[in-house]
Image (cartoon, rainbow, N blue to C red):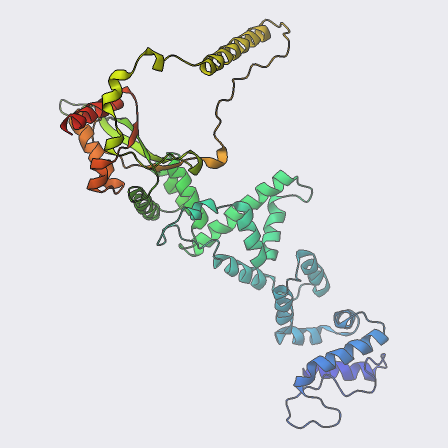
Length: 452
């Protein structure tokens, strides 16, 4: 503050306009307990600033910053500015602007033009903003947390991540955005630039801390789901755009635990479930075929449990007593003859097929045909907002073509969905599959009915 006192006395000594009329020296803010004439305490800063602003307006200045700018440009020499900078006042001033959100790139350039090549703390500002990004919760969200939730995947959005990072580090993001997107860029190009900025910052943050891996983990999950081999994923991990194989394994393990827990809740629930499974044949190839080392086909069984939407859910599973097998002898041909509505729908479908084929041939022969409706009729459409929930079943090491192994498949499904022995004996469940699956389940059902 000593050079500020000298500045005030120098201005008055050189005959400059008097900025403060009939008031003590505002620059003298020593911490002396007594208040003498011509001295004011540091607790009176608000009143002193108000008085200073009022006197500045009288002398033609717009604000305190306006007067300080004129002082730096027209009156302050280099030695005084050097003392101001070495005392840390310049750094504190820039940090105050940054914390208040006022230090935009345009203002930063103007400050640099005024101050020339002096020590302007741009690097420290960027470093502080990058540290804020590195510690941001949006980049430190763990996919392997306990308990895992699908909302971690559903909330992933580049626009939301960019907005949250921009609130913490506006200057750094504006600088990077100016690198990747021109000023007159279209809206789509600007969105692509935001994605690149998010990827660059997440990669740099991941290099500083391996726990900052939300965005790389999402890309590794997408690559794993797309069937990308392990070697390209390893290269992406080294570039910072993916996580390691071990981290990916932990995430998949948490996802599997959550899916298994959700699957085990289907049995105790009161909602009906439809089970679908089919054979899964996987070729096991070998590089060098020998007498006892040949390629073969491995037979597994894969399936899922389908939970219909509330508007399509029937009543709870039927009981064994509701199966009236004795009425099977009363089924006749009238039960299979289509109704008038069915015949009308079949007619509309065939008409649409003929019109589509005719239009295709006419387009090939360059013949103009009248504009007729050749679309298939819409019969009982399903609302996309009421999509069913699909719960994948584990892959079973059984072959559904063998009846004995079908029994093991049904027992495994019973254990995985959490059915009680009473449910398995008394309630009826719906199973869907191809002809072989239905045929084997039917044989088991007839045996159970005969035993019952």
